[in-house]
Length: 216
Ligand code: TMP
Image 1 (cartoon, protein in one colour):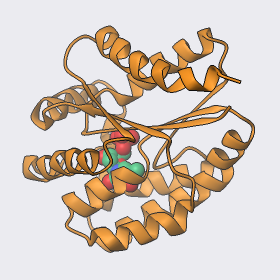
Image 2: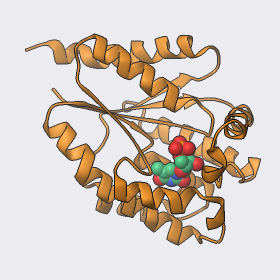
Image 3: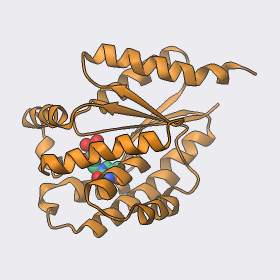
Image 4: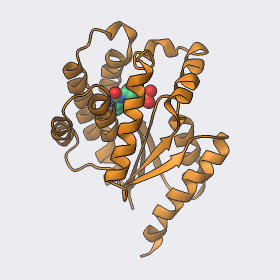
């Protein structure tokens, strides 16, 4: 039985680490799992990711940015997510539709209804069954992300980390608002503490999601 889980959170909230820990857990239970991310997840969308996140793209206007996220998503949904779900895999996606509402909507101030319409155009009815929101004060997350990037080839992708703390605060507040609006789908998990402790909190949520699916 397929299951689609998206992961959201501010910069440095540890999504990528947690997704991989969860994938290992699911595989140990004998579940087949596809790990993917947005923007990106397939070669064409990865090229769009490069344009979106490279510091040289600082002149990108908010509407062009929004349309590029939608374009990357349309490709990713057709090429990766739909086939994986049809094949019965569990899909774990690092960011999805809510990221556009949080960053381009609450963060940049673009119209939320317009973003909903574009999300519908790009993703159709391919919606996550559940969304894990890793909750971390954005000042703490930014510190983590900047440390990580100073030790890796991250600077190629740090256009968003260069945004002001106020921008990231709006994104964080936006995510929490979205979680309140759709409290059935969203699971807000504290991202403070050791990775293994956070992984345990996430496993509890996901094991709960899998339970009814074990029934015939
Ligand atoms: P990542 O660092 O989690 O891989 O995400 C890449 C960046 O892209 C991150 O700063 C959030 C941003 N983003 C948006 O602004 N809108 C979107 O729709 C998505 C998917 C990501």
